[in-house]
Structures are given as C-alpha cells and as structure tokens.
Image (cartoon, rainbow, N blue to C red; front, side, top):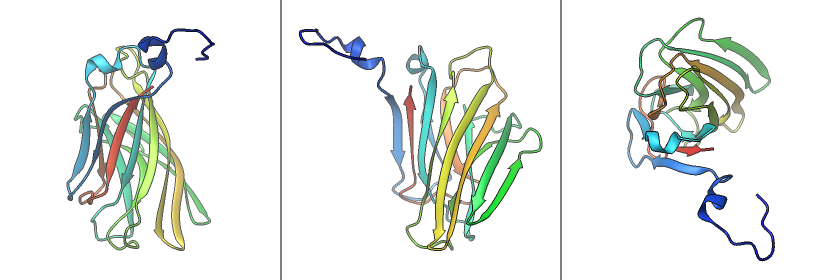
Length: 187
C-alpha cells in the first residue's frame, strides 16, 4: 500500500499487507515435535499461512525426512511430492498414496556435522476454507557436512475441509534438538 503526504494512517491500512505472526517457538531441549495453535479468529480473511522452520534430529543417522501435520491429524489423510537434490544427484518421489504426514524437507540428524540445521518454508493456501482440501508448497535446504547438502521443492495435500487450527512439525524418527524452531505467519 502506498502512502501520500498528509494522509492519516489507520491500523487497518497497516495490517492489510503485513504478515501477521500467529505463533513461534524455539526449543531449549529435545522434544518429539513442535505445534503452533492457529486460533480461528486469526485465519479470518487470510489467504495463506506461511510455515517457517529450522530443525535437526537426534536420530542416529546423517539425515532424515522432516514432516508436517495439521490439527493433530495423524491418520492417512495426506499426500506429498518432492523434487530433491543431494549434491549432484536429483531424486523425485511421492507418498505413493495417503499417509500420515506431508514431507516438507530433509534435515541433519545426529551423525551430521555439529550445529548444522536444515531450514525451509511452506505456504498453505486458504487455511479457513470449508470446501477445499489444504494444499502446501515449499522449499528446504540442509547442509549435512561441508561436502554433503540437500535442497529441494516439496508439496502436498491435507485431505480435509476443516479449518486449520494447529500446525505441527516433526522428524520422521527421533526428537528435534534444542535450537529447532517453528514460526507460523498469516498472509
């Protein structure tokens, strides 16, 4: 929104094009997942939710899949697709049918170089819709060592017409370590 000399500013004018932080958490100790509640009042009039994250797992591996769920739904109501590069090797894969999560990235795990975390974002369209399933699209990157890196595009679908009331991220196995974090913004 453009402003002009002499124009009075109203709060409504300022809030129309600014992302609204719905919630944020950075772990101070290991735990299985991070959940941010999304109150119904915050999604009214929003076109999308932006999910931003940084994560690392304590699983005894170099790297593992990073996952997304909505409203505490752990049932097989999700589909996902990824196009991911690991160094110079490109791979594509999908959920192969309905599963209990959407993959939104690959993250370093316990045998990766210390202090390396993965990071990414996903955009969820129309979070309050009562007629459309919820689509997600995003990008993520993770350095595993100084010579081993993952980056890719990730997308999926939550097969539900329920309004989004919470966003949860988790590692495929193990816990997320301290320093892992999640922020959810309304757009």
